[in-house]
Each structure stands twice: as structure tokens, then as C-alpha cells.
Image 1 (tube, one colour):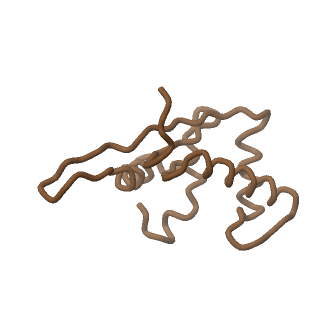
Image 2 (cartoon, one colour):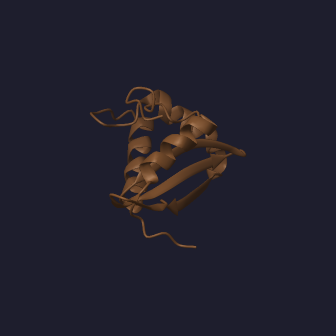
Length: 113
């Protein structure tokens, strides 16, 4: 099933392990950004908002041979007495708490989970 790319929850799986869970309002753009940031870090290019080299090295180790899967789905739409909203941000938090993916380095800093 194809997802629209907006209000999406995604998970990277490598070696039968969930290594990253995230959310995005523009999944295609987010994936290109991630690929560019990790590639730049592995080339030694650093900058604000870039993936740190240590994380890029971890990604390279997880994705040996290019093997890895991406699973994505649109967030659940919830109807409440105050309106209708997409619960993808809450679902992301719950899934991170439940699975504790190794490559979710920022969730503790921002209290995301």
C-alpha cells in the first residue's frame, strides 16, 4: 500500500531489528535529507543540522550491503469532541517507548518519548 507522504510514521529495519522510528509531514523529502546528511557525514562534511559522524558510522554498520527495509504508514485519524486530528506524533512517541530503537538519539533530549 502506498502512503501519501504526509503525517506519516516510519520505521527503518535492518538485520531484523527496528533501528529508527520517526514521523514526517513530507516523507520523500525527509528520506532524501537523511540520505544526504548521512552521506555527507561519512565524507567528513559537518555542519548545523547534519548527522554526526558517529551516527553515520552506525548507519553504515547497520546497512552493510545496502540491506534494510523501510516501513511507513499514515498516522491514525482520531475524532474527539473537540475535533478531528492525526495522531501520528503520539503514535511515534509510543512506538519509540515500546521498541527503544538504537538510532533514535534525539528523543530523550526533546522529551519525545
